[in-house]
Length: 429
Image (cartoon, rainbow, N blue to C red; front, side, top):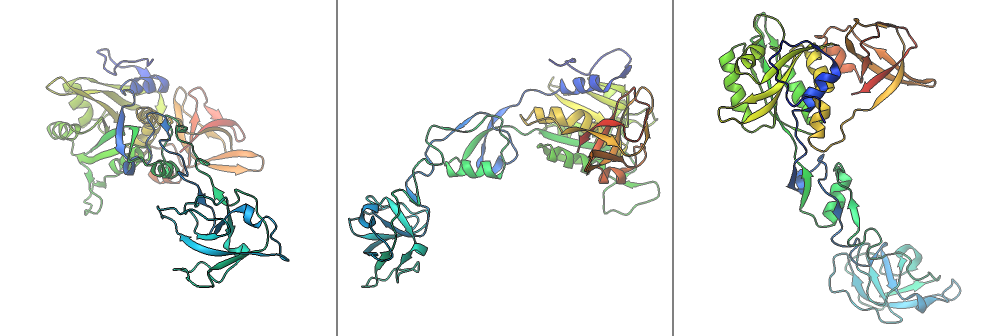
């Protein structure tokens, strides 16, 4: 059970721990919702129930080789000194449905995947037979339509038996399985056109700031290209969600609320970036404090101290979860990793945890007392074990360092000075 039912409180917010805010954010998400989706649209989703095979695979005995289907009893004494020759009386390509019956003392030319004729119990590979037919098509219908075999093979050789891969009624994929290419392959082979999966979360992302302009536009003095929306959109997609919108608005309360209502219509979650600190133009904080339902707090962490979460309520009483993160790029991304990614994936039935490992620092680091710090770093697997190289200063605007990092170094709130060689937990990102 989560520690919070909602992020909204009337009391003045105090400093909140990272764990407390994680619990508050997680409480906003509901349970995974089962839906039936086309097979072409389930990649990356989690199965909502166990899949049982409706048919056997293969569904019929078929040839594992290009060659000749024969009866093993007809050439049990075959040898190089006493080869056995059979007339080739039929041709069975893959896909043939009117499967013939093999008469004693004859052979049928057969292709890989083609149904084995009734009466045949072994397939002689074309490489192990002598025949003028070869594997060209169409087959010759003449005295050359014969095959010579110089060694015996046991019954069953080079035949894929019905159900040898999967038998009808057998469990195939467990509930919760994340569907990748191989899983789509087996589902298609079993004839599924729709699959029960957990619905993707639809996330609407809204960045704020009058200084923001769209990438590709001319930059005027005092302006920057909008990057948080693009970054958070990609982060949501990587987490398995649908990043439904990516908008940004100036520091105007009316425009912010108008756009917020607009993008909320077809979303399950809203993430806003910027406007949550203590400045004079914190539009997100001002607007949502005015309408209510969202609490803004300080979290004992670096970067990402100012945070907010709650429910944005509509006039009809309906509401939608909203999570507000700081506008500095590193703060935005660290906030997503620390607070949003896990409950977002849990709401889609997906495995939630990033890989966490213990590694040693290759340089000394310091951290502010009382704050849990998430530094960027690079993982190095050395002969003596895993090591971490912290990169860049803790400043929350250094996006270039984040782009080169593959771990977040999770420094506890009570760790102020860490020496080179000290072991610490890191999060693989």
